[in-house]
Amino acid sequence: MRGIERESPQLPPMTSVAAALRATTERLAGELANPQGAAPEWSAFEWHTARAVAAMHGISGLLAETLLWRGPQGWADFLGQQRAHIAQRQLRTLELLARVGESFQCEGIPVQALKGAALCREGLYQPGQRPMADLDLLTSPLHTVPAGEILEQLGLRETHRTFKHRVFETPDAARAHSFGEHAENQLKVELHERICEPLPYRLTDISSLVLPSSPAPGINPYPSPAALTAHLLLHAAGGMAYRTLRLVQLHDIALLARHLTTRDWQQLIDWRPWWAAPPLILTERYYGTVVPEAVMASMHRSCPPILHHMCMRQRVSDVSMSRLWLEAFPGIEWARTAGEAIHFIIRRIVPSAEVRSGRKLALTTDPSLAQGDWGRLSQSRRILRAVRARPARSWPLHNVREAQAQCRAEDAAALHRS
Image 1 (cartoon, rainbow, N blue to C red):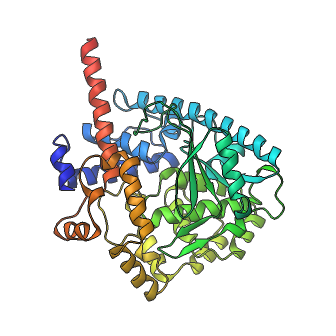
Image 2 (image 1 turned 135 degrees about the vertical axis):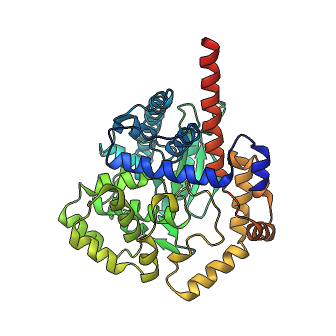
Image 3 (image 1 turned 90 degrees about the horizontal axis):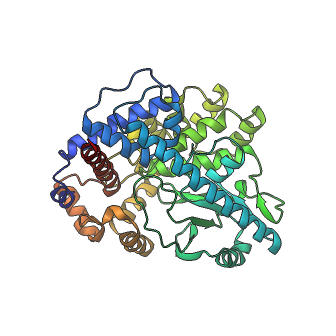
């Protein structure tokens, strides 16, 4: 975005920023799955960008334990500090989950811990490895209102709603840290009454697969490992479609896939998840074979041809926050018919009231929109600007700036000490 570039003379040209994001993302993705013995030969700016990538993708804690090299001064310290913050925040989040479980049990209401919380409860991650920015909970529509009341009784307040969930936050007075993980950031609960993703605009809903058939009051697990896998895959599919995928999501999938039995895989196949192949293909691109050959063949067959063709060529830097450039119609390859594609294009040109409302909310909650004017532009002006030049996305730029500022502050402090 030109407005952002004027306010950030310390950044190199946007083409160089885009190249650094891609190069560092692909290298760090490879390190998670197959650690190398020697550090990459990056420029100072690429090392700054690597911090931004680790933060955006939620992999700092994993890299702190995985990497076989230290890199330049400050890199290993950054990863270690992030791991410590993740561990502290994880402890706070799991303590909140325990309180939630006790309160829901006392009120006779069932609730499920989703995604990261479920993976941690299953022991697949150790403290400090996986960030838990939010505590995701699922309850049936019948219990949504009393569930919200319980969360408010626990000291959380509802701040906003989306088509998928209600958001509750702790009224902490501490200043929010918008770069990477920080133990003091507010705890946030996202209360879902359904599990769905717009692909690319039609909602794909798997709530019936994820909700247990006979839930008990309090915290419930997923009804099966296949149900947890389906949720991780659908969430990753939504991230791929809207270019918000995180590397930690692929790590989740690879980690869980190695624990699935033949019966688990067959259950997943029986659901015929047309959206499962792209995240599985991307996971195996970095982690190698994690899915039985026959299962993978079935997933390939279930995937729509155009989507299958596209995802066979994509890398994580194409479908994640490491992609710098905004797209006019991100995820259009997920449309299964020409009619869906046309409807998606119309929705992008003429956003719904819900989308417009979400953009207004983002102006007050997303620190990356503080610089530049993109968040305040009407849709027509966005389109005109996109026609004239490729706009850059605000979130990756925000993280690159924050990482660069952090590195410069460290250099200044070291110079002062000397």
